[in-house]
Structures are given as structure tokens and as C-alpha cells.
Image 1 (tube, helix red, strand yellow):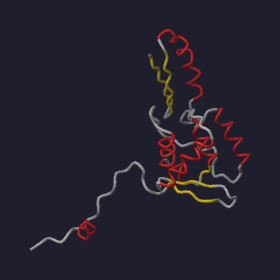
Image 2 (cartoon, one colour; image 1 turned 30 degrees about the vertical axis):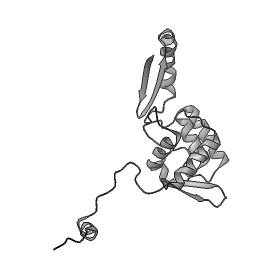
Image 3 (cartoon, helix red, strand yellow; image 1 turned 180 degrees about the vertical axis):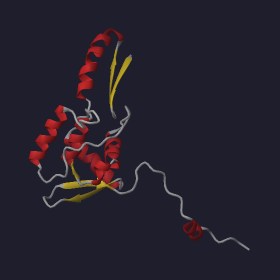
Image 4 (spheres, one colour; image 1 turned 90 degrees about the vertical axis):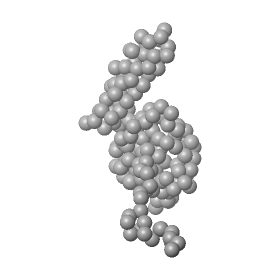
Length: 169
């Protein structure tokens, strides 16, 4: 199996092919590179079209053309990817299910609506994201405010004294 990686700015695409299909995979590289968001561009033309359609559907959605800038690994689960989205500054604004699906599609990840909804609900139940109902009755998700990748903070000197167990004399 041969693997070809294409990286443009913070975006990366990977193609794997058997040696007999290597020529076809190499021919895909320019097409892949043209679809990756450049740092100045932000999104691909296809994702801009999806975002524009979504903006017409939900005009109250905050900055729908913004895309989370995250680094995805090959073995990331749907929940891992969504968690990374909400760890990014993109996740600080209220995001609807449709916003999350558009962000996933921008990264070439096409999941059924129900799968994304279940992943969001599970992340909300584990307090990795916050979930609440918007005025229109649709659920909105935001970052939980807790850094999802940062290790727990050590207590300050004063807190450490309070937490210390009494020492026998």
C-alpha cells in the first residue's frame, strides 16, 4: 500500500493506493490540492457553496462561513473530531447540528445527521460540550469552557495548603 499526503497550510489530505493503482492516485493529487483550504482562502469552493446554502437556511447562525482549524488523525472517531472542533475557537460560539455537519463535510467527513446528533449528545452528557435550546427550539452546542486537551492544573500554593492532610505530631 502506497500513501501520498498533500498539505496546504493547516489542511492535509491523504491518498492510499495499491501499487497497481498508484498512477491513478498520483493523478488525484492536483485535484485534492485544489480542494484543500488555503490559509488565505479558509474554505474550499465546494464548502463555501455548502456554507452559503446553510446561511440561507439559518440566518441567525453566528458566522457560518467560519471553519474550525484542527489537525485530524487517521484514527480519530467522530466524537474525537467534534471534540477537537469545540476545543478550537470555533466552538466558543453557539453551533447547531447543521453547523457541525458543515464543518465535518469541509474536512471530507460525511456522517449521517443522526450519527452527528448522537455524538453531540454523548459529548454533552460527559460535559465536554454544553448543550442548550435556542429561541427557535433547536439545540445549540458550545465549548464547555474546560480545556479538553490540557492536563489538570496543579493547585496554587494557598490551595495546596488547604488540601493538605493534617500531619501527626
